[in-house]
Image (cartoon, rainbow, N blue to C red; front, side, top):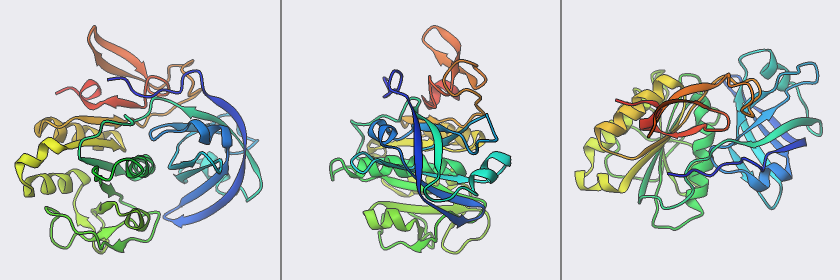
Length: 293
């Protein structure tokens, strides 16, 4: 299956900070005026961002939202090193050098009726982007978004007013933005957060799949982004229930343009196992090709 790629359309752009706010749990929401990047951005793409002029190495950041007409992109990130700590100090109206959009995006059309989007930690932002894209398509497509985190969520969860068959009792916490869009979402954590499912995202997905009519499985496909152990579990779940599944990998990157191959992973192809670069050959892959059973 061919995925949308940005090869030949990557921009080097001076982006202006429009808004930058702390969201709890050492997480931040950054809005940048970057019209060239916004024009080409799709769910699953990322930018390579210079956090500070004192640091030559850039950091890859997933795009959470993009508005083509207004020319902005949103990035949500968590501080975990010197680069992101310096980025957290940057103020409105300052400029950041970005390269983007980069990579192979999630499939953009021909969805099944009930896409299941699963995001964990730093993998939550691409799921928001993808759910917004699906929302702007046909009303017959109704995504279900599951998000997991072991630190406070970068938003204030709300009790969902959107009911859906198969969701375990007491699992009512949702993301307010998705709630406003009319998209069903539920949150999962092992930290005992109110209204969240007590378990992993795959545990919640399994509970839902087992509680709905098995004939509904033909309407479901999975899209996921998060840490590697989570993606392995998602891929195994998809294989067990015979569901199509695309995953976006998280890997350390140096150049993010395919030159250094520092992010290469083993991928199953028709010609056998090959080394593919997550930055330009991904980050989105068919789950079965990177996590074969």
